[in-house]
Length: 359
Image 1 (cartoon, rainbow, N blue to C red):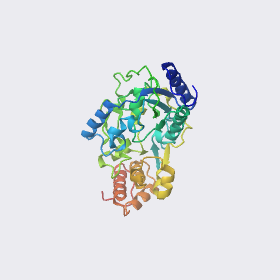
Image 2: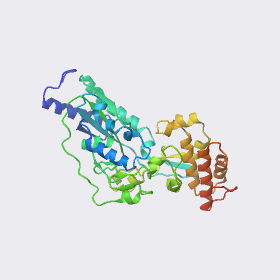
Image 3: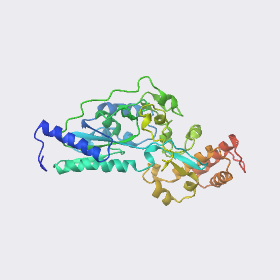
Image 4: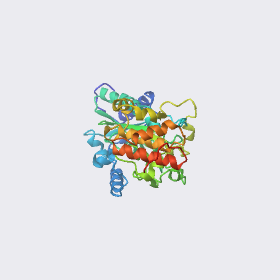
C-alpha cells in the first residue's frame, strides 16, 4: 500500500491489521489486538452504577467523566478502530529487607507506561504514513484501557477487575492507538478463565473486592495510598509496608504464576527508603517519583505513606522512633497525626518508644 493511499478493499484492511500487530510485537509489545471504536456502552453503565454506590470514592481517572472515557470519538473524531497493546511488567518476589524500606507496586517500579507509549507510537506512526490519523492513549482519563483490551481479545476480566491474559495473568500495562482507519477486529474473544477460583477475593487484605470484578475503592489499598487526605485509621495497619500501590490480588492469582520473576537479584525499584523520603525535599521527591499519581502533586502524601510504613515496622531501631517523634511535632496536622498514630502502633506491637504518644 502506497503512502497516503486510502484503504480500497477488505483484503488491504486485513493486511494492514496484520502488519500493525506484527509491528507492535517487534516494538516490544507482548500482545496486540484490534477492536472497533464504538462506545463502551456496558462500561459506561458499570462506571455510573459503581459511582452511585460509592465505590469510586474520590477517585477521578476514568470516573471523572465516564461519558468521555468510554467513547473513543471523544479522543479522535471519526475513530473507527483501536489497536490495543499489552506490555509485560516484571513482578519480582522481592520485599523490604530493612525496617525503613517500603514496597512499590510492580507497575510503578519503572516507567513501564513510557515504554508502552513508545511501542504504541510505532504503530501510530505507521498509520500516519498511510495518511491516517492516530492517537496513543494509555493510563490517562481518556479511555478505559481494560475494556479496550477485552474487546480486542487480549484477555478477560478477572475477579479482581484486572485484565488477565491467557496463561500469563495480569502482570501487564495496557494502552491503545485510536485511529480513523477501518480495520477488521480480532475475531476471537477470550473466555473467562477464573472458573471457581476466588483467591483474589479472599486474599485482599481489606476485603475491597466486594463481588467478582467489583472493587470498592474506599477499601482498596492501591487507591488509599494515592488518595488525598488522611488514610482512614482502620486501614493503616493493613497498609503494612506499602509505599505505593498494592499487588496482593495479583500475587495470589494462579493464572500466569510462572510469568513471575523469581530471580532474587531482580530488585530494581521494588523498595524505597522511607527514611530518605521523610528527609528529602519536595523537589527531590517529585524528581524521583513525579511519574506516579501523587494527589494534588503534593509530596506530603508520600511522607504520609512513609510514616504509616514506619508505624508498621517490627524493627525496634531507635532511629525510626526518632524520625517519628520529629514528625509528631510537625506543623502539618495531617503528617503530625500520622506520626502520632505510628508511635502508638509501634508501642502496641512491642516496639520501644522513648516518649509517649497521645493518639
